[in-house]
Image 1: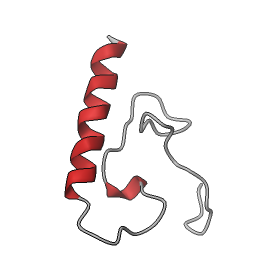
Image 2: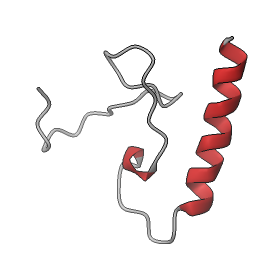
Image 3: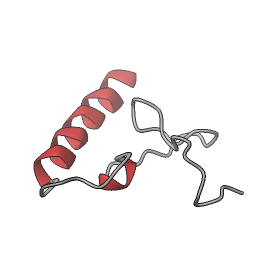
Length: 58
């Protein structure tokens, strides 16, 4: 089980959870630190990028 204090990335560059197949996380939870401003547009861009990745996989 992961400890909350570990500083290890939980997702890869395509937002796929490591060690678990077919689970993707697209939220500000994947940011390495707290954003200084509202992350809505950044999360939207991540969602578009993830959608394009998932479509290209199939």
